[in-house]
Length: 574
Ligand SMILES: Nc1ncnc2c1ncn2[C@@H]1O[C@H](COP(=O)(O)OP(=O)(O)O)[C@@H](O)[C@H]1O
Ligand SMILES: O=C(CO)[C@@H](O)[C@H](O)COP(=O)(O)O
Image 1 (cartoon, protein in one colour):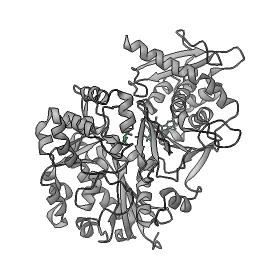
Image 2 (cartoon, rainbow, N blue to C red; image 1 turned 180 degrees about the vertical axis):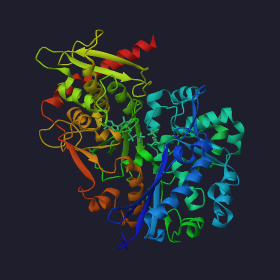
Image 3 (cartoon, rainbow, N blue to C red; image 1 turned 45 degrees about the vertical axis):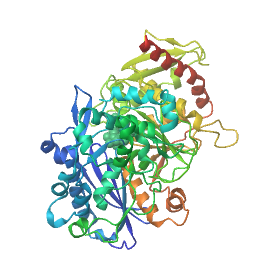
Image 4 (cartoon, rainbow, N blue to C red; image 1 turned 90 degrees about the horizontal axis):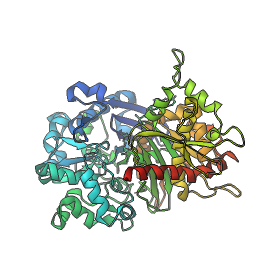
């Protein structure tokens, strides 16, 4: 480490529960890491749980902005120790990511206070508390905006039309709806908000010492940005701002997004020079949302997919095709104009699998707890079909109301013939061991169903499917789960686990900073990172992916799976 000479790049990830920082060198090698855990480091002081405050009565979920300011000082202090003996002055560029959709409301003093940041005047929180029009930022888990959701879905005609324009149907957490609600319930906060940042641009602002523009990709998480025209939607701004007269004012508060994900937005604020030893030449490059940053943790080519198996499950692809639909999301790609990030975001991920796991006998002490779940998966044939006459088993396991699709909490078990016909509810159920395979298959079938329009045949003779599937997050450690993903989703070149696991967004941020400052004229992120990235030490193959016969068997029940969802949705409408 002491021999490191070249420039270094720092990536942050400001997520719900942690602020992480990772430093890499020009060869993409990780040099140092540090993190702050909001509950562990500041829980009692701020009265938060899992990084947020929750007001059950209204569905509000929000985070104290002061906590993030304190965390930034603390993570930099820890990072400078972790870097030792390397000086922080070798960091040439900084980027990073923020949890998507959250917003910070700045008051009229913000620009001046940001510009005057000075280590001699105290900590970040001491100097910037007075720059806030609102002490809290709404969090992506907030669901207090039902009234606004209905208004957004209706504004352009219907939900599908909204998705065509903004890349997504209305979602409670999307920032346009959140701003509209703040204006309704806290009109003074809205009136005092001279500027509004997303979490990613907020963090960039605090580092650069002035209000940074919103990012080309993160701006798509607001239901306000018109993707086909790459401009604000005046009609949706007016809806959020309470009428056409307010649209221009809201547009000023938000500012114009920066359409280039690379380059520099300015030098790091003087505050960080004397306090942490940064170089005055260190550049702050555009930050982005945490999901867009995840697809930058490796050179992800079109037709590759990332499945993130954390608390929630997300499925991400980099694609040149813009094919929006009310049940999923399209964002501008964070670095490559003309490309998009496709995202499915499920609430029922790891915790739903844990519920099924916990119905099975507990293994001996010292075990991971997943042994019986994994054995049950491996002892069961795909779709529970053992012999020719057996019916295929498909189910839905939602312990929370799901968003994709919007089905109430509950568990449903159905069967159909192996060709997908004759779908019937299996009211008598099936052995609980069969649920282990069925829940993982169900999650994968949903991803396959919704991504099928984006994939094509990767090679002659193979059916349409992703080329590679990369898995990240806690569930990626589980070989039985990754096997079922491969069986259902395919992956012509296999399923790979990303070694950085939980640090993918921060790593993507560090790579983004590197590309932002080292790119040659017209050089894309994937070209630059692809030329330096090595599989060895970055990924590990965990499954073969496509299995001829098995993949096709799952394909036959996709229609039945969709029909099962449709029937359950219809039940709720009556
Ligand atoms: N060996 C394992 N097998 C299956 N799931 C696992 C395993 N280890 C961890 N998990 C799951 O990973 C989830 C947490 O993943 P993580 O990526 O750390 O989440 P987040 O980033 O959302 O906090 C847990 O809910 C747990 O169910
Ligand atoms: O809301 C979304 C995506 O639309 C979430 O994926 C958040 O962006 C997740 O943030 P963390 O869990 O990483 O804090």
